[in-house]
Structure formats: C-alpha cells, structure tokens
Image (tube, one colour):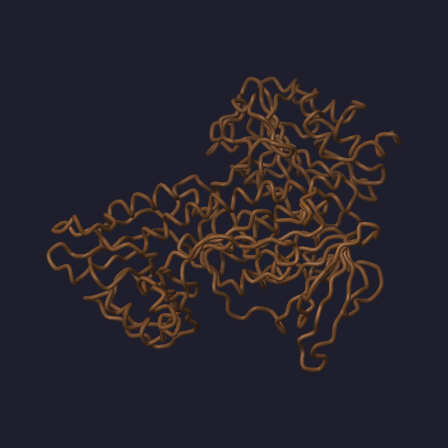
Length: 637
C-alpha cells in the first residue's frame, strides 16, 4: 500500500485520519445511504462506501451486536480476490482452511453397507485464480469488514438495536426516502426513529421488510429435501476428515464434510431425506443426536465420536429469486429513478451445497457500492444505478439454475449396478459434474452482457485472456521502479476508481502516443472527468506493462504520465509501470497481442469493461463518456 503522500505520519498507516466534522450521533436526521442489515452484503457495501470521505453512510441492525456464529463458511476464490482489493486477503488466508482437494466416496462394490473412496480431484483447477477456495466462519468474515470500516476516516460502525419498520418516497425532497425505524433494546424498546436518505439498501435477509416495502417477492420452490448441518469437534478414523468429502451411502443418505479453520473443527451436512407435508414438522424438530447418528450410519464402517457441537441447524433446500433488485418500477408500472435497492438473501436464496450464497451476496454489495459512490460524488449520472439490477439479477438466476441441479445430484442416492432400474446418480457422474462446475464454485463464472458498462468484443483478440464482462484475471509482473515481483491485479484497491491497463506494443510508440492523448488531448476522458483540484489518477488509475525485462528499462525513459506528481507536495508516484515476469509472461498468459499491444479497461469492481487498441481514442471516449458527467468539468479546462 502507499502512504505519506500528503505528509509524514508515525501512526498506523492502515488507519485513515478521522474525517473532520460533527461528532457521531445516535442517528442523524438525513444520510446519503442507509443500509438495513449488517450481513455479508450490507457490510461489503458499507466497507466500499466507507472509502469515500464525502459520503455519509449508516447501517442499522436489529440485533444487539455483531454476529458471533455464522451459518455460511465457504469463501470462493473470486471473493478472496475482492477482499484483497480491500487489503483483507492476507488476514483471511492466514486464518482460513484452504480447500485443496475434494474426495468422493460411494458404496463399496463388495459390501454396499460400507463406503470406499472412488475419486480425488483438485478442488480448483490450476490457473483459475491466484487465490484458493477457503473456509472461514461468516462471523469472522464480517469482523474483517467491520475492522476495515472502523479504520476508515468515517470510523463507521453499525447502529445496533434498530429495526426497519416502513418507508415512503417523496420525489420533491433532496433526501427522498423517509425511513421509520424502531428500537429493539430494552432501555428504549419500541421507540421510533425517522431518518431521511438519498438511497436505501435492504440487506435484511430472506424475510426482508425492505423488499416487501418496494413490492418485490421471493419466487421459487423448495426442493422438498432436508439437511441437518453441524459444526463439531469429533474423533474419527475416517481418513479424509481433513478433506472436503462428498459421500454417497447405499441406503443411509448422503453426507458432505467440510473441514473448518483451526485444524480440528469440521462441518457436516447430513442428508435427512425427503420432505412431505406429513413429515415436515417432524423434520424441523430433528435433534442434534439424530444428525450425529445419521452421520455415523453414512460413514460406516468408520467411527465418529462427537465431543462437542458448536452449532447445528436443520433446513430445507430451496432456491428463490425476486424479479428486480430495486424500486425503479413504481406500483403503477411507470419507470422512475431507483432509490431503494435490495441485495443478498433479500433478493436471492440458495442451498448451501454450492457454497455461493454468501459469496454472491457480497458481490452484490461490491457491484452496487462503487456505483453509489460515483453518483453521490457527482462523477456519474443517476442512471448508472439502473445497471445494478440489470447486471446482478441475471447472475443470481444463473446461480439458482446451477444450484438446483447440483443440490439434486447431492441429494440423490447412488446408482446400484445390480438394480439400475431404481435410478439414482452415478458417483462418477457426480465427480465429473463437480469438476465441470469448477468455475461456478470458484466464483469466476460471472460474465456481464454488453451494455452501458460492458463493451462489444470487436477487439477481444488483442487480449483474449481478459474476456470482456468477466473479472480481471490477474497475472504476475515486475514493478519497474523497485523490481518488485507481484500480481498486476493486486495494484488495484477498492477505492471506486476505474483502471486503464495499457499493455505496450512491440516498439512502445503506440503506448507513448496513448499516454500523450490522455495528458494532452482536449477529448481525453481522463482530462474531462478529473476535477482540477484532484490528483490526475483520482478517477482513472493508469498502469502500463512493458514487454522488456525490468533491468532493460530506464526509469527516466518512461512517459511522464507513468510517473505522475500527486498530493500537496507534488510527490512522484513510482508504482504505475511494470514489465513482464520472465517466469510467467503476462503477454503469453493472457493472450495479449505483442505487436499491437492492448488497452484493457477495468471497472472499479474488477470486471473487464472493454478491450481496445492503444490508438482507439475515439472508441475509448465513445464508451466512457456516457458513464461520466463530464460537461461541467470540461468547461473549466
């Protein structure tokens, strides 16, 4: 990370100086963004908004304090990439269980009452991400985000013991959403509080009151299959207890084992069978003792001695989704500016089998956060916010379609070779499907369709490994100024800025001409979108990658835009220019045209917005100008 730009500091550089302003109050009369719910989606959104000093954000939570024991635990590779942009990945990776391999067990052919291992695969295919799939308790994941918020200039903390009651919209007001809250603490139980907001985001779970208030409903069906889940400390002779294990027994049900962080704790997803109207109430009352005994039966001939259960629950698999993630369609069917949004379980729910519920929820918050920041800072028109529902609702639909198929396979009994007419799932088919679905479970399958924020693929061949609409797939480089080997994607922070990754052409002339355009042309998107009193990279963060080894590049030969002067002292930023890493050439890894080079435009949420030639100035401006409010800025230049 970089610090000392505007003066030397002796305190912890990870803690931003506190913003100057009025002291924190219980709840102000008006805020820019009010977030309802402090779950994963709400906290990622709050963490993103906390990075903008000019935006006032508050989070309300009906619970009396932070989550102590969460239900979700799987953190996909893509989510770790996002956490790295917040500066939190190292802490997470140090604490987490790394899911390296997955094993598959099926009934023993010689004794169908017993199980045997039939397959073992790498959990995430090589090269899919520089980060692993990990397991961390949801409460710890949320604590990382809370710590980040506390270190921000706003010193942001949730307002606990406040529940959402209702809200109204008044288009004539600067803060058009009027929200009624009610206190839930014993000292002020039932007391109502009113706050006005420019925007409201409901991250208040599957029973979301915010969703109800905007007339949206969760639609979908239960899968009529129940599972018991428990986190346990146990002694067992099952040899794969520290590997992710998918186990199919002949007649006792199925079991999914997920080792937990810390080396001892293990999560068991135990098949409790089909749910019918006649047995639903009974299954809901399933005891932890029955869950333990069912797990023992499935693991036969191996033993399982559970010493302590940290947490357990019983749930029925179901997938549900809302039609929209905002209030852009009024009750009378007319279109209006979206002011209220929903995210996470408030607008989509999944089974736990794919391990994506928490991950997709956090990606909702990341997608919405930078867009709210851009609009509230006056960089973009409010129409940018329409892209949130347009982008995230189809992603949730795709995941639900995948989750239905995967959950059905996990719940199905294994095929019996002696009685194929009985149906079931071939264990080999289950393993093959798991491998094919690797991009979903790693969280990197999302691909946004062409639109306002995603360009067409006319020049995709210039950088085939950076597929437009997908997340920016990082690769090793070497920073020129200090010879540091690092990942290019790790230079980006979750700060709301767009990235321009300029990959040099063979001669370097096209790269220099591109840099000249950004600095000198009256049509430069950087010039017309950057306020006069802001650093040159405050809106667009330009990074260049050269083809030569770093020892063959002289710092003084770099274009001036790659050594920008910033801050109140005009200090030089030496971290803009990179070269190839000889052991993993990014031009080869990501299919970049060595002769022509390429420009890769990346959104603040790390998704590739466009791939263009270095000399496609008009195309670049035509794509980016509609996204930014440039007229008032360009008139002053």
